[in-house]
Image 1 (cartoon, rainbow, N blue to C red):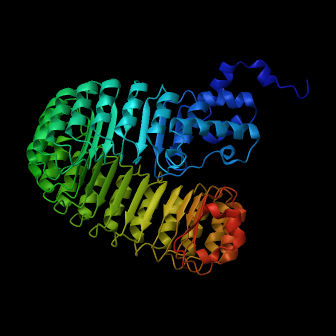
Image 2 (spheres, rainbow, N blue to C red):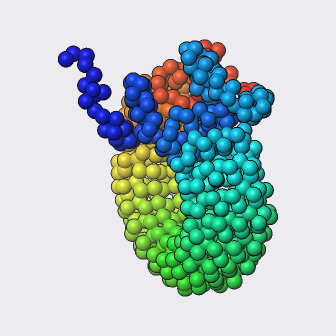
Image 3 (tube, helix red, strand yellow):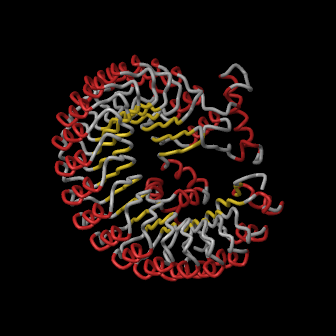
Length: 608
């Protein structure tokens, strides 16, 4: 029968709900919810996660959501994000909805003794909002409260009593006290993941009581910038959290004693991240001796341990796969060699600002770590071409390489990587001034799987490099910011050879003009983000050609482009239906453009 609603007639609720659950994008689910009231009701049942900001009467907003979505298990609230209340709460819809909103407001005012100037209009989530979370989402398993500074121990304790199934709790930046954390330990016996970064109100008492209450289930713990949490807390963690697998510590108040207790008491530890300036080699020796299942180790800003600590890790942690060494000034090639020879399962290595690690250390990695898939060398002035050549010869499975401010690496090193590591998919280089066109040409000739290329402020890279890349690779991501020798010829080749390009940054290219923009518009219809800032030869004409067919464009940065005028900005706004952000000088935005797209326009400097 023409016009008959066969779907709603024949399909039961359970089947429609199952269909909605298989939709893989929020946009699709939102569209389905607008079809009819039944679909709206059923689609709400499929929602398990909500992410909101904690501004704009958040307590009221949370209460409203809890009445609409009954199966929520994951709530993420970030006070740094902004939200706006639904339109009907702003008086723009039918009277029935306004009455509902008014009654909701009245309910809140009664709960708070009629103080409309209280938390209802506060810009921060409060204990009232937490109470609404506990009442509305009793099935809650994951809760993130990011920088919710008005939340107190009372609110957290109330929520813990109502949400006993809580498994993950993130309190980053919340000024909760020991009472609230103790309540979580007493009520949430299934808690597995706890983040206490920047919780300045906590002391040892709160964390110790949590370890006593929920320690058996706890698997992940993060502590940073908590001045009143000391080794005593870590001793309690080591004694009661025997199933702990992940620990992240950033504190100047934690010493060897605390790390030793965790290492000896948590043998299942797999991830350890330390930024504790008072920890020495003794702590790492304990980790190497006791944490035999360790897979990831990150050491930041260590000034009191040496190669002896790394040697202990190499001798004991044979399952280590991921190692980060950042600003560890007393480590040398010998320490890195101990890791390379002892941890042959290593797949990810980052060396950042370790000035005593040089070519010999990297050579040992190339000889011993044949399963390496990602390598990052940042501010490594003592590593030369020979080290990277050895990586090229030994690490055939390398897929990602990051090089930042490595002044002794040149074209020979890049050619060695290109020839030896043909599975390379991601290459990021910044301010490596000895790497030029020849090195990048070799990458284009040999690394056919490359999809992500960033060459920033490399003065010796020119058009020939991009031509070779375009002929050999199908890029999705390209950043050539500050490579002054690159002009229209190289970018035209990219446009014609890389039709899958989604992201492009060509900022500070003084020789790039409208011809390249026209080719990009003609050949790269999937382009979503482009950065054109400081490109003085690009004009409104080139911009018009670019946006004519790049209808998927979502972001365009074009500050300090002297050839782009108010008309060009208006063209971008009017021609790109999916545009979400335009960065431009304020004087280039006409009142009409401002009215049409003010919400998506950002200004680098309001006085320009």
